[in-house]
Length: 200
Image (cartoon, rainbow, N blue to C red; front, side, top):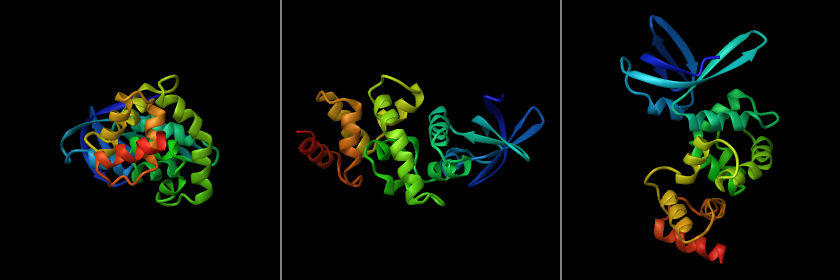
């Protein structure tokens, strides 16, 4: 099993990257988020990998960090959600935003991913909501996925609001659910005020 690849980026496009490791170029299917984190061709990159075994061969998938890989594996644990759909979801939202959407039961946000309909999105929320809530409370699950979810997007209003609510004594899951239900374009102050109304 290949855990990760570190080498020269020799090719990239929104859904594919090739990394040259000691003269062998490995082609990986990637999400749009991973593509946006890659440097220019010729730079040194590290991709965390997952091997998908199929009847007609093996696909290698690459992720810019362990949190995205963990999110991918959580998504593919849902019945009827394959690697292609999981990559589509991660192309639409990063692990932090995905976690907030699942915790808040916001399946409509997940339907924005190409090829993911309402039924599949509802299954994702239904099957992962309890797991995500436990992870946000730090009682189970992947540490890297939890870390991404707990901090949301660094410097974002949602992240700051969740952090502030945790400092006020609320759990990560309570804060994430409350903030996840709100308009993410609001300022940190407004997110905190509206989240507190829900929580009290």
